[in-house]
Structure formats: C-alpha cells, structure tokens
Image (cartoon, rainbow, N blue to C red; front, side, top):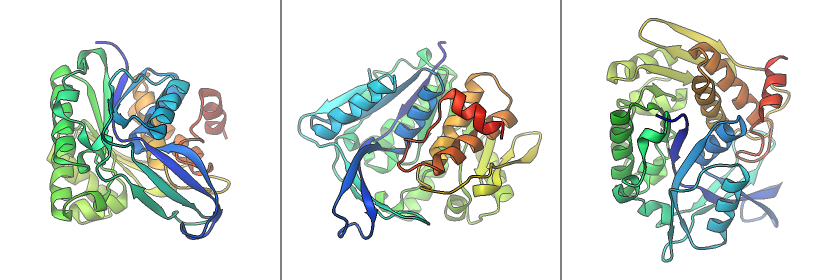
Length: 312
C-alpha cells in the first residue's frame, strides 16, 4: 500500500464579501474556493503529503478555477469527473469582525450531487494509506450517500485509516432524524471520529465531550477526538482519555475552516508516524492558525510556519 490520503467532497466557488453588512447590501466580493474536504486537502498538501481529491464539477468558470487551485496546491485530481449539464455549486459568505459570518448556498442540483458508486469504482484504494470523509457529501443526494457508504466499505477492506468529521449541514438533509441516523451509522465505520461539542448535542443529546466520546466509542470508533473550541480537544481511546490544550490566538478573524485545519493537522501527524497526542496538538495548532486568517483555507500553514507557531 502506498502512503497518501484520498478525500471526496463538493468544492464550491466562494464569494467573500469585501465589507461588513448583509449579503444583499455589500457591493463587492472576492472570489476563492470553499468546501470542507477541499480545505483538508489543501492543509494536508501544504504540509508536504500526497493527497488526491475526488469530486464532480460543472464545465464552467467555477469548475475550471477549482481545478486550477487543486493544481496550484499539488492536489491530485485524477478522480475529478466533469458534467456538461450540471453546474458547479457556489456560495456567498459575509464578512464579520466577531461571530460566525452569514452564508448562503447555491448548490442544489450541483454537479457534485450526481457523484455515484460508479465514480467510486474508479478509485484504487490500495494506493492510499488514509481516507478522510465528512457528513457533507452524503447529504447532497441519495446518489452521494450511496457513494460515500461504498467508500467507507472499500476503504475498510483495503485497510486504510478512516477519519470522519460529522460536519453537520442540517439544511442539506431531508430531515434531522435522517441526518442523525446516517451520520452516526457512518461514524460507526470510522477509525477516528472528529465531532464538535455542538454537533454532539444534535447527534447524541449532549455537549459533554466525555459523553460524546463514549457514545462514538460504543458505536465502534476506535478513537474519538471532540473539539472543544479554544480549550483544545478531548481524546478517548480504548485505554485512555485526556484533554490536549489549545493554542492562544492573537485575534479571531474567521472561524470557518478551523475544524478542517484541525483534521489536516491530525491526519498529517499520523501519516508521519507521530503519537496520537502529538497529532491532536498539531491539529489544535493548525486550527488556531486558520482562525486568524480570512477565508476558508488561505491561512493553512506550510511546515515552517507551523513549526514556528507551535514553538510559541
């Protein structure tokens, strides 16, 4: 088996407001690329690891820009499919000085929502050591839900380490009950589950990190790492549980992408053979660096930046 990470998701065009205000009142936007799994891919690639990203794009300016950004970050795109009939999704994001920004999606019926088990069939899983999946892609359609479940099964058969971030998007699911059932079923197939406390409250009824971790361990996950904001992350394995403290940040600029940065930090450290505690500490560091930057992935660090930050 070769070393490397494979991901699947929906990257989108991202229009970020240039000034504060409601999305219908601002007069200028900057163009970037968004998507939780895309952010993780960028973070992993910047830290020097081989990563491949599977998706489906529309043959349009957003799709072409996404491919260009994948290439710029040296992210493999051999499993990117194209649609001549469906468009690439995009989103508007507000600018705020505190709190979470307003977000509005234009993604219904997107090209990515047509990803299928046939697309998954093209992946050679034995060429990778790790896979990262989230709860976003399976929320897009029955087709993507089936595709992601097949990815879990094929990855397990091939012996990949599976990390899973629930990354809840309630507005994309037919109902909250279906979301909870589907997300928890996928989490049960993962080696490492990466929820947040607010997600725990929705998915299993508590925002207590110990209870969240015990819940997912009982479902079948080998390791659960619950993100507890600036406090850091709470870890539970078969033999121990502990808190890995977070890093102080000078100023929170944009909270979007922090969890994706955390995942990138954890995954890359594990790919390098570091201990779980070291991996979670790196995850905390990458997440902290990301919240100090505007945009979903622009602040994700290169090795020297990360090393300098972690020595503070």
